[in-house]
Length: 91
Image (cartoon, rainbow, N blue to C red; front, side, top):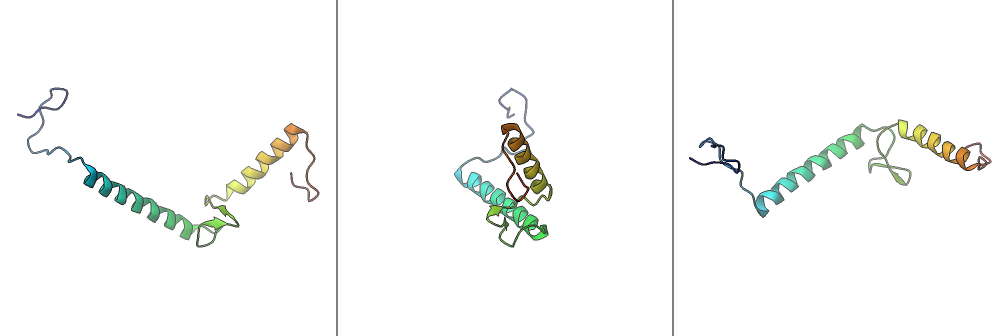
């Protein structure tokens, strides 16, 4: 009978995973392909950015709340630092 590292018996029908560079590289390829597919789906569904996933010159996070959050955050910085708002009315 085969035992694991804690001494517990293993089911003989369960084969231990094969580890090595080939399986690791293959797993990484699958993981990267899945991430790329997820990213492309997010870009396709986003109404904020172009087909390249960029909004103007910045990477789009596909979340419409980010613009408002950034405006609130920079307004807090300006208020905390005592800086005047820009002439266009935005901090």
